[in-house]
Length: 376
Ligand SMILES: Cc1ncc(COP(=O)(O)O)c(C=O)c1O
Image (cartoon, rainbow, N blue to C red; front, side, top):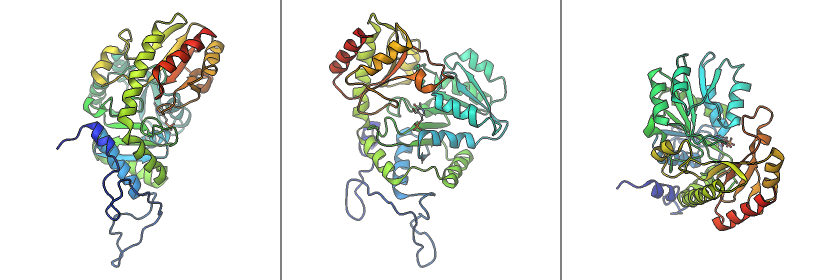
């Protein structure tokens, strides 16, 4: 029987344990595994940096959820990104979206220049610009949709088609959507990347990352070798926390997406708001592509207030239910002035606040924003 994604997610790690029949997986902390009488590691495990039973369970679940052939779990989202960049050769060119999560842009430009990677950025919402950029030999096209923090929507299929024509590989950072909302492999991606820290973990208490490969090919083997040799692997307890988080991800996300849409519509009609970035709004420039590519419109939105950076920061500080904090995807709502955390190279408008919608009552969240906006 073919299971729906919600069912797969709800059952992650709940196969009865072979010895105890426990319905929650055990956490295997051992770093080393004994050889049998013939001197072999007959259970397939040697040393925990290479592989670990708890990590293996999570990696199998991630591959199944994303519809890929092989998943690798890392100690953070950035460790996963780093492994992809390290799999490239000096002289290779990467094309990044111009409004990508600043951490990925800064890792690529500040640290992989000396590795010899050529890093260029382009507005990926503009197919013409991407075609033009791909006239220069390119090995990797990086897509992030919705983008962080301006929620720009990239047409994965269209960009993958162009990349494949010139022999470039496509990685999609699917952190903000999760496989329950967007299915990048169905639109031509080679690799899907996740910060597990966000919706998979779901409770702001686990730091992790993942790469899922469409094929178990030579590139996948190379990245796995980097994971195993360099050792930025996800620890067993974090793997267990992630599996526990995944089991409630579908209901969390459904609620977060519903509340985000209600808040986006409310804020779009508010006199103190200059602009709301949310692909669920009919007026959003990415709405048409998002409607084709996403099952829901996500639990993240950004607002630009009519006012200064100082007023935006004051709003973020004066809310009752929204914690003024970085990160996203947890049960608690968060708000943050992104230009401040991104620093002097930030491309984010000064009056922009990013919101991660949690599981609180949407009426409470709306009242909180209404009160806060009166005081800016
Ligand atoms: C879209 C996106 N990609 C990657 C990352 C990095 O993930 P991590 O913080 O788990 O290293 C983040 C973190 O905010 C993110 O939002």
